[in-house]
Structures are given as C-alpha cells and as structure tokens.
Length: 318
Image (cartoon, rainbow, N blue to C red; front, side):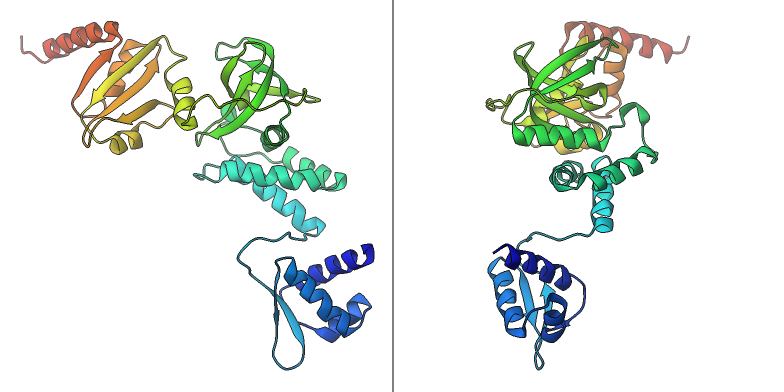
C-alpha cells in the first residue's frame, strides 16, 4: 500500500507538468507496466483529479476539475506561493487579506523546516512600501489564524492606544481586516470579556496557552461589532447623527474605521463616530455636504450652535 501511494504521488507530480504524457513514458518513469499506469490513472480519477486521455496512442494530461484536489509543489514553488500569500495578506486588495492568511496558515503547517527557514529569511530582508505604523508581519497573522483553527488560547504583550503595555491572555475568535489594519476579536480571559486588539500592537509569546471551547460570538454582525469599537467607543466624545443621504453613499465616504453607518430609510441613515475633539466631530459631519441632525452628545449640539454663530458673524459685513 505504501509503495502504491508513493507511486501515485510520483505520477501526480509528473502529470502536473503542463504537457501530454504517453502511457509508455509514464511507465518508464515509474518503473511499472502500462497496465499499472492505466490502473493508477483510474485511482487518481477516483480521488477527484481530472485526467484526460488523448485519442489514438494512449496519452494523459491533467485537467481542471470542479473542485480543488491536493496539489504537489516542489521546493521552489512552495516558497514562491508562501511569499506570494504573505504579500497578499498585508496588501490593500479588498477581500483578499483574510483568505490569504487562511491559505498561508495551512501551507506553513505542512512546510518542511528547511522551507520555513527560507521563507523567513526572505521576509526578513524584504521592506514593504506600506504604513510602518500599522505594518503587520504575515507570520503573526498566520500564527493567530492557526490558534483560531486549533482553538488554542494566545499569550501576548499588548500596547494600548495611550502607549501603556501589559500582558494579555485571550481566546482568539476571528481576524478582521479593515483594509489598512488588522484586528483580533478575542475573549480576554483576564478581563472576562470580548475585546478587539490591533494586531500591529501585540507581540505574541510562545508557546500558546491551553485549548478552549469556543464561546458564542460577541455579535451577529462581526464587522459592525469591530467598527463600533474602533471608530466610536475608544473616544471621549461619541457622535450620533441622522444624515439625509443614502447609507451606501455615506459609507463610501466614511469607512468602518471612521464611522458606523446604518440605513434608516431610502434616503437617510444613522451615523455614529467618535473623536476626542468636538471641533473634529463637527467638521467630519459638516464636510459630508448634506443635511444632518445631531443627536449626541449634548455638548456637540451646543458646540455646533456656537460655531455656527461665529461662522455667520465672520461673513457679516461690518
């Protein structure tokens, strides 16, 4: 059985070369009879691989199927795929980051040590042209993704927005990518509550902590949950406005890292955002260029009235 399995892998590796193989060529390469080649081809088909047979003289070529069967990669191909996935994981391409992290976590789990070392060496000498303040090492993302999959708690040092650092232990639930930054949604075991951590602010400790049983997620809409915690909750002032424009129009100008936008009608929406400055809140919403009403905070209502009076006075001839 082991000999047959090894032969199937060698056959699959040959067929993945983009060319047609005659049955005789394959038999010589594998050291078996043409009849054994035909039988092994049928085994590959049973495993989900599409193997086309050419007309006339027996010949074979691997084709595309309806699903993705396991692939065989040589060393150079595996390193190239790992580097490509790592680059995609921290790129600004919408929707590709999280998928790349999952794929990279699976690949790195089976990479031989010698190839993991080569991938790490290449990463260490590569300088991404990105925002260094929020740059994240793909290796950290894949380590977190693996912990989520394996249900292993994480231990890490975390630097909060005010610069203080402390040690945390958490049960990771999901990674969320805003396009510019990565966030980890996790149950903080020390504070017994759900938290959102910026991945570029944490430093993982090894080994991981004990395995855990997943909890109920913190909300049905994880994107909105994270958006509220990064755009509203951390700030001194939490603004809430009714904006007279379609929600999709406002959301295009106020991404989740800045505000939470909820439709309330075809042409109105509720906008929630935060800031440590009343002036900044006023400028954000006024800059949208559409009618709006202020609901919260009460200080902002008074501030906008006073600001409006000063702006009106500044345009009045003396």
